[in-house]
Length: 256
Image (cartoon, rainbow, N blue to C red; front, side, top):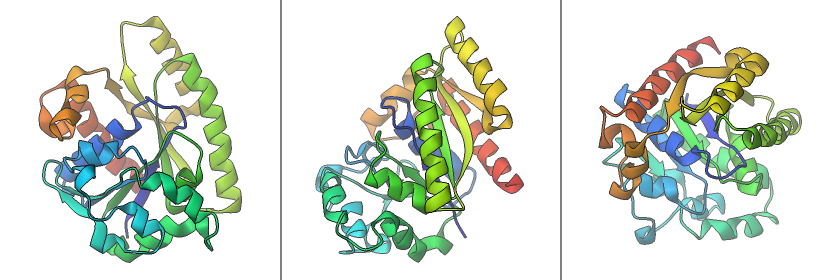
């Protein structure tokens, strides 16, 4: 039975896709069977895994609307060594079309149930908004990984996301919990980063992952080559941090 995790934060540019792609590749390096679900119409996770979103014959759009299934649509990422449920711009239209469908919040959950036994982990890269797509991700997941930068605006947005997670837990998905907060794009030279990091640890305790992802040029370059950073330059600090994060995730799962 797969563990299903959303990578979510309604703030844009906080490293959700970078985290999703590199965690998937890091877990694959550790021998885990991984499915990466791209739930963002921008399709960046699809491209970052080396799959051309412009050439897709079918995408997660067809899966959510019941026109196809996960087994038919998924593609294997050769550069990441994991499977991908890809997305492109068509997915933006799914929000409107899903409004009139029965059980619209749980379309993704029902679709992923077909391949539950084939994976150890399913990672869902959510869009930067608390939308119907994000709601589908939260309803399908066992837990939420929240990547965030250590800055004050990020702290403000965090409270909104935590409240949303609590509401989904209460009304739609009693299995949902916050797995942890991941500090990303961390710059040790900035006093503010250190201060916000300390505040997170004080407030959230062991919900804050020990692994910290540094700001790293090689991680930023990797998507343009269609590769996860952990495979693009395995010796870089960013790649090593994501591999360490993958190991921490595997260890944390055993304690849940």
